[in-house]
Image (cartoon, rainbow, N blue to C red; front, side, top):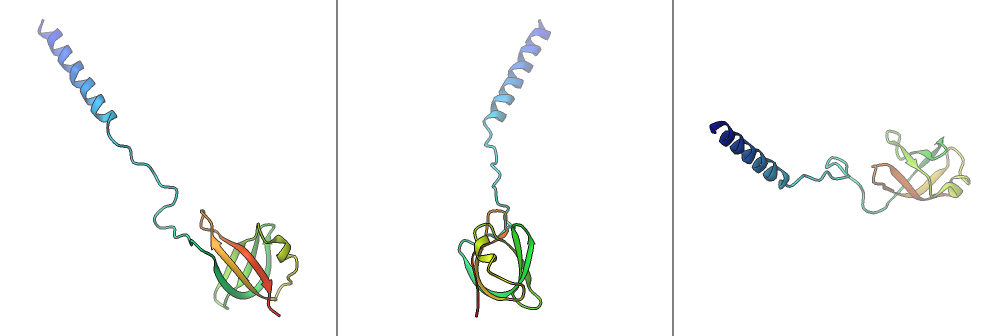
Length: 109
């Protein structure tokens, strides 16, 4: 009889623990880690067009020490008008992955 009472007590405690654990609030991960800073608006800049890196990226020297890669999905038609070494004025912003994406680029005469 003591064994049945002990078994019932263990089952009740186990059930209670599972019920309480099930009510715990789960932490929802965010898509953007806190260390990734993402620009909320476009930035305007000037530099020297260094050429295509691949079919979707170009390189622009914003200063002799600061050479940056930019994604070019929305400005491919504008890129086709440029030659390596052209001075350019451009606008860009970071996407959700932290990549710098051009929204506008034009040659400076």
